[in-house]
Image 1: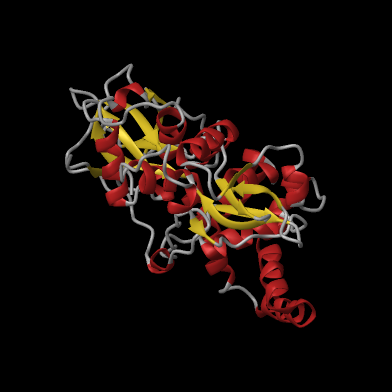
Image 2: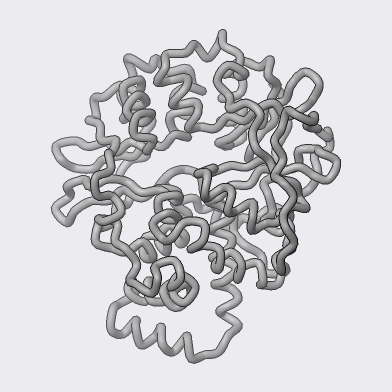
Length: 375
């Protein structure tokens, strides 16, 4: 869950609070209670660990993203999603009509929720689709059946994203892009520097074999929050061991299906002989399938599904499976009891949306409710 902290808190205080709550983003408020900034696990890796900033003596205000863009609960949900995708915002603060901060949108959770709604809605449709999937299962096996199910679910909606062409492969998506590959003996500090340069999670390779994955959240919660000696600690001490990898020849749609089914945020990509090709995250897949315009029809269709169809929350531990997240339900947005407000001029609210047929509000996306830090 996201947390709320003060600009007067140290980086270490904020990071340890996030680790305790298993969060990956903190909303930072000023002395008057107004929203002053936001800091994420990626910011911590890039601006603190990689830059040799002392987290115990430095205020979080020095490294946060100041005056973040935000949306209100009554703004257009589609415009909020488009804003996140177009600007590569994984997180977006949400306020109520009075300006109180009531939640945080996470693009990964929004995507997972949308697919979950469409899947559950499809189960109520005709048996013809089910029979087609069974036929695909006979031809392709269980894995092929899963991919076929996702293709039947999203294929028609994604046709506009690809211009009626086939879904691109991960190989084409990763072509020419850098990857964060480190050895098992690499220090946490050096790993963070590489992650900051590539803006990707790190893949740990030993004797040519993929042995681990280090996400930005791992670096923050398992490394910095525990006050490990970053120059002297090997990356193996915080990595997720033996992450599941996929072939570079699977399509973006198949990778999306796997991320959704397993609640992954990232997927290592390896050749059949184990050679590492790279790593993809949820934003890579969104951009690889048409960006904001390509996903508009999918989110649009998901929000047409009745609200009583519950959805599972999105995992946040890189490519590690989260059994708890499979059974938990997405939280409904509720206002914060403390009523944190943003002052005019400090926060940049989304401009008024021109009236269209889509008047569905941000509240339908069920933003995560932040927790006030006890630091």
